[in-house]
Amino acid sequence: MKLSKVLGSVGVVSAAALALVACGKSGNSNNAGATDAKKFKQTTPVKEVKKGGTLSYAIEADTPFTGVFNNELSTSQTDSDVAQFGNEALFDTDDSYRINSKGPATFKLDRKAKTISIEVKKGVKWSDGKQVTAKDVEYEYEIMANKGSKSERYTASLQNIVGMTEYHDGKSKTISGIDMPDGENGRKVVIHFKEMKPGMLQSSNGYFLETASPYHQLKSIPFNKLESSDAVRKNPLFFGPYKISKIVRGQSVTWVPNKYYWRGTPKLDKITVSVVNPNSASQAIKSHKFDIARVVNSQWQQVKNTKGVNFVAKVPLQYSYMGFKVGKWENGKNVMNPKAKMNNKSLRQAMAYAMNIDAVEKRYTQGLTFRVPTLIPEQFGNYFDKNIKGYNYNLKKANKLLDDAGYKKKGKYRVQPNGKPLTIHLAAMSGSSTAEPITQNYIQQWKKIGLNVKLTTGRLIEFNSFCDKVQHDSKDVDVFMAGWSLSSEPSPNDLYNEKAPFNYTRFVTKKNTQLLKDIDSQKAFNNKYRVQKFHEWQKYMFDEAYVVPTVNAYQIDAVNSKLTGYSLKPSDANSVWYNVGYAK
Image (cartoon, rainbow, N blue to C red; front, side):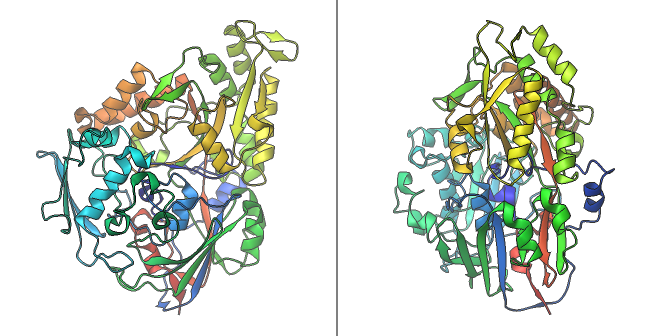
């Protein structure tokens, strides 16, 4: 359940990126969807639990899951969802995502010494019975930073750990800033930082990892073979409440209790996780095919009156966005091309103003999905800049921007300011049944302002192929529609800095670099200063429009009313699958 924790600091959202992912405020209270939404609770009713029973869980995806079960090698949200029953994070948090010491490990920050100390509790064991050790915690960093593993999680933020860069560059065989004072088989790890950061007390801050890897299982596998190894794909070890007993590749996973689980024996005998197409989700819910299934928001009207179901919901830390490709990933950093087709602010802004997002979401999701104005979700309180209204639908403004920037009409479509034809290639993911009509709607909207937008490959792209094209800066992608599942520390540094692999638009400017530095600087230990810098960054990103936030949405789960213990609260995220069971 601890989605952002499981993912480290960020994860690719694998769903129809335009319509049915992302999240934020509870807006649009004047329509049916939002009215329904106000009734939602974050937990199932509390009842006495009985032992035993099998739970069936739906993973909604229109493609098979990749099946990479290691936190530092996986980039797919679907894989994280499949792994959640065993993949517990080292730390529990409170409901504001602040790290505490109630989970598998204790946590201590020493600002003066520039260290954090992590101690795994005695009795926290892998599903093969071995105690989780200091080396297991340290090895997670080696996997992430070793060039051989090709992990996308090696970010600029993690290079703040002493010795990390030297290890990554092959100049050192160990990471000098990670100490194991009681040895590899001890339980304590001390991490030394070049400088302390204001977000370090929050979970998923990006400056250190919150997971571990079983060194005794993985140590003999070369880093470049890890991702394809059986230890990662077929028989991964976890220290959470359940362990894998069977995998049908890409389709289903069967989980049984981890008898060594540190909190005690989980309640269920078995959990079966199966991939189901999003288009079949409402039918699956109505026919009670699964005990837990995610509601596809566009299908809410079809399922909302289903008997024998509790609807449990939250607005998660996610957003969908439109990104404009303006460069390439080269030698470990983003390199912007000033002559890129989409490197014209007026063109980007015009495309954003031409999108009729409010009308689309009202029609297809009854307001359960809604437009968001900035790249910082409202759940982040003061860090969210409420004065930014976002790109409201305005065709007149869009046309004026293009006229003033020299994009003249030549027949049906506009040409570039240099007189050359302008064709914009859009990459968007396949997903639910509404993905296609929604995407086609926006293509029509752009046609209204004279822009010739065509789908990359001529159709919506399957998730894995989409990621491949966007990550590798494919020449046939000018604009793409994607989504982020965010970390619970609001800093946008890992997504948008010069050395962030996840900065898929590849934009780099001096001002952006400076603002991101300010947000995470020593000065930012003063919260008022940090809030101010967050607001400046949001205004800057809104104006530049390299990345335009589009929507976020309620995340609603249909849960069998016989179940108890299911919760979407941040404070329950690490222990939820230990607690879920059938009521007496």
